[in-house]
Structure formats: structure tokens, C-alpha cells
Image 1 (cartoon, helix red, strand yellow):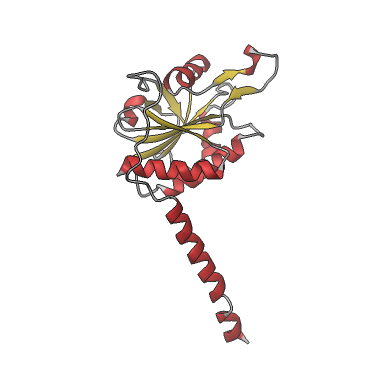
Image 2 (tube, rainbow, N blue to C red):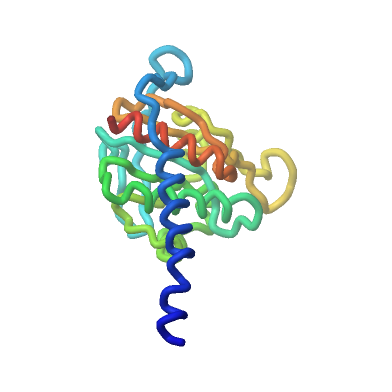
Length: 205
């Protein structure tokens, strides 16, 4: 009985192996594909200095020469953020062997999302603080970074209506080692994450 039970898992293992191989094929980069450079001509992400989840000052120079995926979120978000960060975690795990790829999560709720709050959240996501960084700072600076540097929409909702919510996009921005934006991807979409994985590999090639 034990031997029969042992061998009965082989078909399941084969299915898992085949499925994994199919996923790897799906995210294979297209060497002929050239990613666009987005924004006005000459646009590049600029300078900033913010605090990490470890209460350490982190500035834009720390990202010099790295490829990065950027998002704007807040820890108490019950809507799109859990899906976004679930997908960000998958990307992070996929590229753990490529330390030149960074994942940067800016909060849009700095009054609540202090470094200690971000630290707890980062630990829940399994983020290491080196390759996946959570950042907070002055509210005006964060929203300016979103709009002017990464061309992503973010605003306190009280600028629109009197609520305790925050307006922010579900899109991730892909930035190359020259600080150029090379793509936007819906962070709630599994299909878009496959496209993003392939585009990161193009930049790594």
C-alpha cells in the first residue's frame, strides 16, 4: 500500500514540472523587441531622499545603475494594493538572483505609514530591504515624485473630496539603468506581470 501511494504522486509531479516549464517559456524575452522610452524627450527620473522601512535615509543615488519596478501604495489599502503587492512579491522572488533589479514601493500615506509600519508590512511580504525597498517621507515630496518623476498618478483624496482614502494608480513603472521609463503595467493583472517579467529580461540582456 505504501509503495502504491508513493508512485501515485508521479503524475502530479510531472504536471507541476510541465506547468513550470510553460511559465518559463511564457516569460522568455523577445530579443527583437525594443522597449520604448516613455515621457517627453529626455525625461528621466530625478533626485529624492526618503526613509526606508529600516529608518535609513535612502536616496536616488542608491538606485544608480539598477533596473527598477516602482509602485505607489499604502499599507491600510483594502482595494487594489493587496493584489498589487502580491504580484510585486512574485516579481521580487523571480529576480532574486539578479540583484541589479530593484523593487521600490512608495507609500502615499506617510502620516500612517511610518518606517516601523512599513517594516512590519515588508516583513509580511518577505521583502529583504535591499532588493525590495519601502519608502516614506514628506507627503508633498512623495506625490511630486509620483507625478513628475515616474509619471504615475497619486494624490491625497482630500484634495478631491473629504475622505480618508488616497488616489493612486494600480500601474507599475519599469525604469532602466539610465533612469528612463520603459513601460507601464497594470499591477493587478497576471497577464501584465508576464509581460513585465519579459521586459525586465530584455533590459537585463
